Length: 376
Image 1 (spheres, one colour):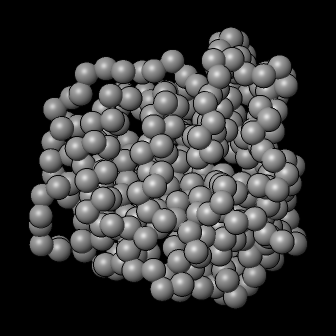
Image 2 (tube, rainbow, N blue to C red):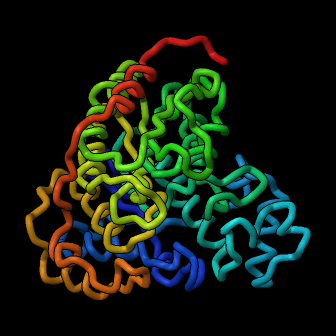
């Protein structure tokens, strides 16, 4: 019997993330979901009844958004462990940072299955944390940005199939949630909000890009800090969300906007992610949090574990438990920052705050988001 997320939050994980890697030289060589799960358990925060193993999405579920030919190519590639020149050229498998790896079909299908299970579990309301999801760059007919399938789109489509008419997709990944925005361009039932680093791949999501009225974008400058995130939340994001009176919110909590991440140049502490999550509790009858980017296992695991604590109303102690500290000390991170990790990466889950001034660019972004404009 599946747990009821309206009674207490549900955590969706999978064993596949424990053994799956994009390859030793890829940014996604690191353990993220498994680290998150291990930390939550080591802190004593995950009762067995609150945990559900993600199923693998079926072909019919995946092709609700993705092209059957593309899905077939992913399966062929996993079976052969190599990609044909034709499939590489057409579907960008094995190209553009989207490597061929052992679970190239199974892992994305499991992420999609977890997201679809979250939609199912929240049909009558509730809160779900599914850190294996959040692959927001996936396209209907090709891989993009380390993403092979787009589980946020599949989750939102499942909510729409349930009859929901007012859905918020809120993305705080350092990279613009282009695949989700494009999937719901012009769709008045879905409002996509994205806070991301300006001038960073995929080079979309400008402040004046409204996606036919279905989006608000906040391209923030380098060094974006906790105070600036709070300003955007208080003066733009939360007013937009509350005005919508949403029936469901999907938060993509990519951790690559944290200061220690190697693939972005933003300066958030994980307090920003925890505060964003807390601010969304109770705003809609349904809240699902998925993962996304994040390429430092220490910062990703600590952030996403902290989000689970927030969703459950659990105070985060100033020091990790001995078991959680052992999980963190057991991590290997082959980038320069991992050679001499700071002690607080082992002993705390909550970062020191990274406050600062609120720049005029940030204030203007908030003002622009609230301006009424005719659809382009």
